Length: 180
Image 1: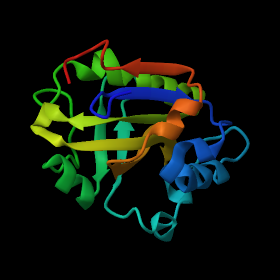
Image 2 (image 1 turned 90 degrees about the horizontal axis):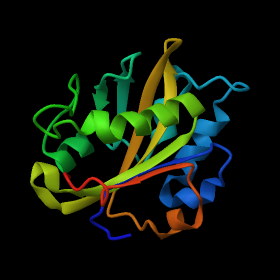
Image 3 (image 1 turned 45 degrees about the horizontal axis):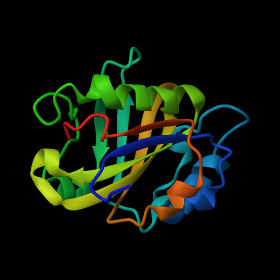
Image 4 (image 1 turned 90 degrees about the vertical axis):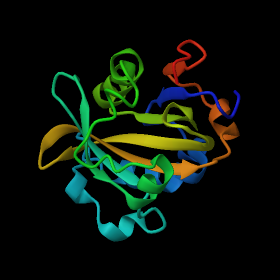
């Protein structure tokens, strides 16, 4: 995998957390909040749970029909990386036209419906920041008993080699979809 290629992978939540490298502690934390097969509620997490990640977290509300995702939280570190505050907004539209329906929607739907772990990343070329590579883990949560919501934690310039050792059950590489 080239560092600049966008990829979207979904892993079973029983995958070894160590595969996710720097995200392993976040994955373990998320897994610890499950009650049987019930997704964790966003309120199950405490601010201190995210020490070291403050500013690099987003929380997206996914419409029940998966028509879009609106960010309820977009950390200040993400504003610096993306050059925009997406709080209260969707990335669909001018930023990445039709990208939700063709790439993100099937990826997010697989994560939510399987209560799985998503990993995505690539170069921010679509927004004129080709010098920035990001990788992020996507974890479904509920909010106030409602679902689905997507909690995401981002890392700039992450070494992704450990991800190649695990077999996802869903994978999309942007070589198939070169719009980004």
